[in-house]
Each structure stands twice: as C-alpha cells, then as structure tokens.
Image (cartoon, rainbow, N blue to C red; front, side, top):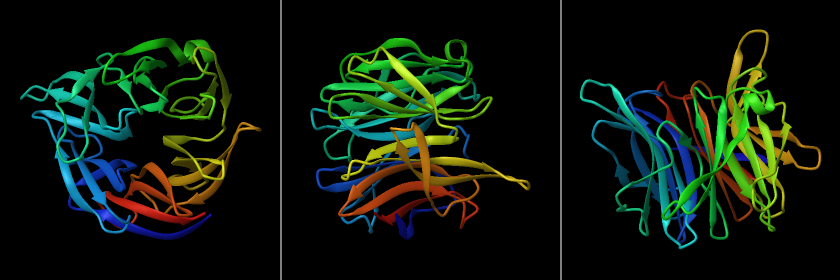
Length: 313
C-alpha cells in the first residue's frame, strides 16, 4: 500500500468535516458537513460529484432553519435509491437545543432529496447504516448513557431497536462506546468496529451471525475514531479512522489505514495519511486497483478542508 497523491476537493473559510464517499450510478459522491466550527449550531450538508475521482463540483446542499446537520452519510438502499442520513440538532431562536433527531432522505439523482424522515429515539445517535440483502443495521449511542443499541430493518419503512444494550459499560466493563461501522460477509455475518472514548480508549471488534442477537466482542488495543470499513477485491478487510498515538511530547491524532486481521482479532497499521489538527472521519472506495479515501484535515490550512487520497494497492 503506497500513497500516490492527496488532493483538496473542497476548502473555504469554513470548518469542513465528517465525510462519506460512495459510487452511485457510475458517478462518485462525497458528502460532508460545513459549519463555523467542529461544534457549532450552523451545520449544513454539502454533496460533491465527480465522474473521474479527480474533478469535483457541488451538486446539492441540504440545510434546515435553526439546526445543525451533523455527520452525513451516503448509503445505497436495496431499492436502488441513494440515502442521505444525518443527525439534526434543532434549536430555538435563543439557541436552546430542543431536539436531537436522526434523519433520512432519499434521491435518485443526488440533486433533489425527499423530505427528511425522523428515525429512532431523540438523543440517540444512529451512526452509519449498512445493508445485507434487504435488511439494514445501524448502531445508536447516547453520550451520557455509556451504552449502544442495535437497530434493524428498513430506514425507509420500519426501523426498530432490536438489541438493548449491544455493548455497554455495565455489561462489558468498558466505557463510552459510540461511533461504529458494520461490514457483512457473504453468509450475512456482521463485523463491527466500535469506537470508545473512556478508560483504555480501545476500539472493539464485534462479530455476530445472521440474526444479530449473539455478539462476541474483542478488544483491538487501538483507538479508532470515526471508523470506516471496506472489504477489498482481494478479500482483505481494511479500516480507516483517527488513530491516537501518545508520545513523550504530545498526543498525536492523525488519519490512518489499518488491515483487520480477523484470525487474530487485531488491527495492523498500514499507512498514515497527510493529516494534522482536527482531522479524520474517512470513507473509502476501491476502483481499478486503487483505494480512494475521503477525509478532512487541517494539515495545510487553519480551517479544515476536504481531501481525497489516492492509494496504490
């Protein structure tokens, strides 16, 4: 694995962050949040499109009055529609938060989107939706509860909590589980990477057979923020996210690519991307022997910009 190039595909005098990347109908789409800061009340969703993974242009913008739209994700629904999901924090004109909602819209063009549908419970953040055949899974977390729940179904129809808790401080002895990604094997087995931000800060590997009620959990001994997973055409599973390396002088948080060794239940660090400051929240696609990774970083600009890394596999 070798880095070929890193290009900025969106930058301005705003905080641009929290990416996702998908190939849909022969084109490539990258979404992200644009706002004043990492945490502010004015987040909107930008969606870029490219025909060649080199030249990008803005195709649509989603916003909501008196709301912050956070951590957008793009997912292809089994029906062929493109789903846009995000966490909507709504405020009064005086700035008081009145709702924290999970929203989903769909489109077939990525230009215009359906009215957002609210899913799940208020204050429980459904992170990333993944599908096996016609069934979707997503994991919800709450910052104050030290637990995550598993949701299953169809976000455009019926989507319900099916396991409470999935992982928690009280049941597993490890605190603050939160962001996640799920990948499915050919037989429907779910593989999950779960971020944690307490005690050892180590991410967890979860594995469950079809039905998704009985999970086995393994400690990965690595901090992985904003995890993203991808199975390559050669069968290997790679993980991208924010890695925390502590040394004598400072704590370094940068964006890394790992290989997931399922046999030994561990992560193997492969490549550090150009990144510094506020950074990471990557997404990945494989195309013609190359890996493309979207992410954000401050390594060449005081304000966060959106980058696309091209990697030779």
